[in-house]
Image 1 (cartoon, chains in turn brown, cyan):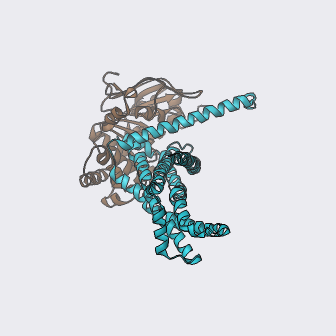
Image 2 (cartoon, helix red, strand yellow):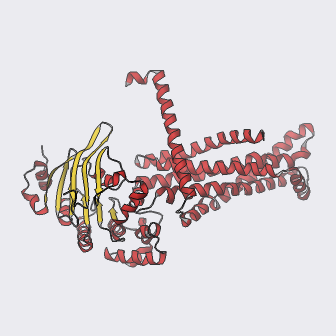
Image 3 (cartoon, helix red, strand yellow):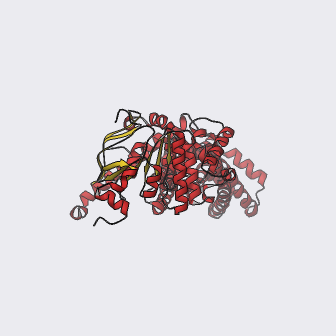
Length: 249
Length: 262
C-alpha cells in the first residue's frame, strides 16, 4: 500500500510533554481516493494533518508524499513539494489584509511568479467554481459570511490544480444548508480534479458526502477503516457511537 | 515541584536557563530574519507597504515629539545657563543634544510604542488564526513575506525619521530662543551649523539604524511567538513594546560608550 500511496503516515509518533497524541500511526491514501479521518476531540486528527504539511515534526516515523519523506526535507524542498497541495483550514485562514482575489491568487503571485492581471483572472475563475460572484473578488475577508469564507478558502485550495487536497473540519460552524452546499462543492471539485483528498471531520453527514473511505483515529492509532457504505454496519463501538450519536458509557 | 520552587538556588538556575534560552531564541530569529532580508526572493509590495506604515505614518507623532523636545530643551538650557551667563551657547547645546541623543532615542521610543506593538499584534493575530500556517502551505516563506519586509523598513525608516527629528527639534529650539533671548533665526542657524560636525549627525543616524532593527525584531519575534489566542496576542503586544524600549536604552548606552571613545 505504502509504495503506491499518494500520501502515507508510517510509524508516526507524536507527544506533547507527557501526553501521547499519536503512537505508531499507520495510514495511507491511494491516488485519487478521498479519505475522511474521524475521531473524538483531542485524538490527534489536526496533528496528523499538520505533520503532513510540515507544520510540525514527528517524534518518530515518516510522512511519505509520493514516496518522498517530507519530514526529512529542508524548508525549501518542502515548499517545492507543496506546490501540488491545497489546504482548506477550519476557520478559512484567509489573510485579513488582502482582498479575496489576492487570497485566492496568493500562491500564484508569491510562489509561482504569475503576473497580477493573469492571477486575478484565474482567481475569479476559481471563485466561480465555488459559486462566488466576481464582485466578491474585491471584498475583504471580514466582509464575508462564514460560508463565503469557506468557499473562498476552497477556491484558494484548488486554484493551482492540486493533486492532493486537505480539509480541516470543512463544515464546522456552518448551518446545515450551507454545510451541505460546501460538502457538495468539495465532492464536486475533488471528483473533477481527480485528486487525492484527506479530510478531518466530526460531521458524519460531511464524511459520508465527501469521502470514499473513512478511518477512525483513537488513542493515537487507526482503530477502524472502511468504505462509507460500510459505516452503518461497523461493529466497532466507537464507530457505532459516532453513527448513532450516542454516548459509549 | 513545590519543594523545588522554594529552593532559591533552583529558582536562580531555572531563571538563568530561561534567560539563556530566550537570548538563544531571539538570536536565532534575528539571524534567520537577516538572512531572509539580504537574500532573494524579496516581496517589493510588502516592503513598500511597511515603509509607508513604519516611516510615513509615523511622521506626525515623531515630528510633534521632536518640536516639543527641542523647545523644552531650549527652555531648560536657557533657565539653567542663566545661572552662569551661558545662555549664548543655547543653539549649540540644543543641536548637540538633539542630534546625538534625544533625536535618535525619542524617535525610537515613539516608534517602539507605535510600530513594535502593531507588528506584534498583527503577526500574533495571524499566528492565532492559522494565517501563517496557511502561508506555509501556499509555498511562501513567512520569514521572507512577513518578517524581512518589517526588519528592512524599520532599519531604514528610523534613520530617515531621525534626520527629520533633528531638523524639527533644532527648529523648536530656534523658535524658543527667538522668543526668549531675541536670537534671530539666521544667527541661530549659523551658530548651529558652525558648531555641529558631520559625526554628530552620523553617530545619531547609526544609532537609529540599530534602534530600528531592534524595533522590527522585537515586534516580529513577540508576534511570531504569541500563544493562547487573544490573551496571548495582548501579552505579545506589551512584551514587544517594553522589550524594544529597554533594549533601545541599553543599546544607546553601549553605542554612546563606543562613540565617546572614538
